[in-house]
Length: 273
Image 1 (cartoon, rainbow, N blue to C red):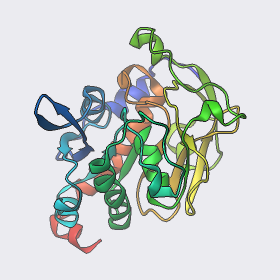
Image 2: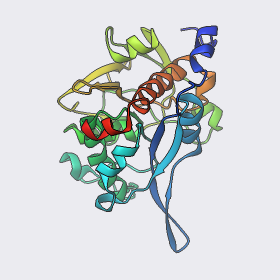
Image 3: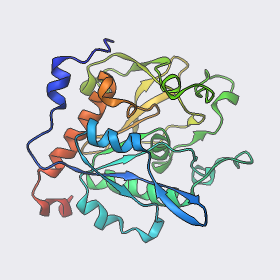
């Protein structure tokens, strides 16, 4: 595809005159010195602000301490981010992780029920990398924990010895399923994407529709069939320099449009979803 921003892309990216949508961003937990922190990467925050045209709000990983329904009453969309951590495999009846695997049980306890509730309530959802994997697990799917050891997939991991510009550069093509959400929103039949993941979809959850597939057959994007609004998961990182990549920008633009549509509704209607 042409990687040059068109006048249509730039026009579509202009902010709406309506109230900017309030978009929640999932946090990870991490320990800094003696204190636990809730954190989200700068690139996801900028993706919401610059790509979706939303007001970013960080959602702490508080598990069952977080009142999900009250939160969803106030949000116009949710972005589930990538992370150095992996979903604990007991959530999908998988084998124990390799020693040293980074997990974040508080994030799992927050995001998995939040994804299900958000889709049920009609809140637009975009899942990226770990967020994509969380969406699959939340709806009953499973994961390959180490794709490079599965025996039938290409190398999907980044070379961490390289600069970020190299790690996040497009490295392989995906075929976009005709007639799906990605096809409709981007107008692309194929696209070049980055690839920075060790895990991936093993069994796709019931109710999820493949949206993009890598040359090795790995599902790289899916949508939620039952969703009443935008609900998409992508394995790659479209938030990376989102305003410079037309394909990535169209994903965030479609997500932002769905969030703006929710924001434009009378506030009382949110409680009736």
